[in-house]
Image (cartoon, rainbow, N blue to C red):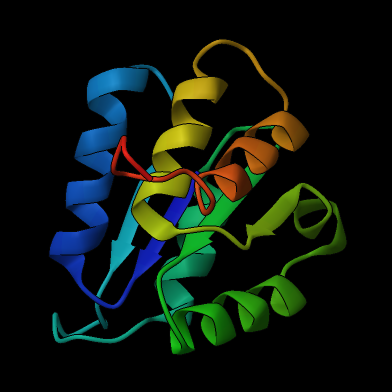
Length: 128
C-alpha cells in the first residue's frame, strides 16, 4: 500500500494506525512535497510504488492534487509495474485501515478495495 497525502503527518499517522492493527502489511507513507511543505511529489510516489515488492499495490490518496499526482505517476510507470497498481477511490484513513486489516489476513487486492470503498458508507455513530 502507498499512502499519498498532502501532509507527511497525515500519511505517517495513517500508516501508524494501519500497522497497529494489520502488522506485516507492506506500506509506504508519502506525505508532503519534496521540501517538506504541504503538497504532493510525483517522484516520491513513483519511488514508493517501485520500491514495494508486492504483487499488487493499492494507492490511497487524500484530496485533489494527490489524485492527479498518482494518476500521472501511473502513466509514467513501466507497463509491468503499472499493471499491478490500483488507485483506490475510498476515504483516506478509513479506507486504508479497512484495506490494510483485510490484507493482513491474506485477502487479495479486489477484496481490499471493496472493503476500502465500503468504509465510505459505514456510520461512525451507532444510532444512525
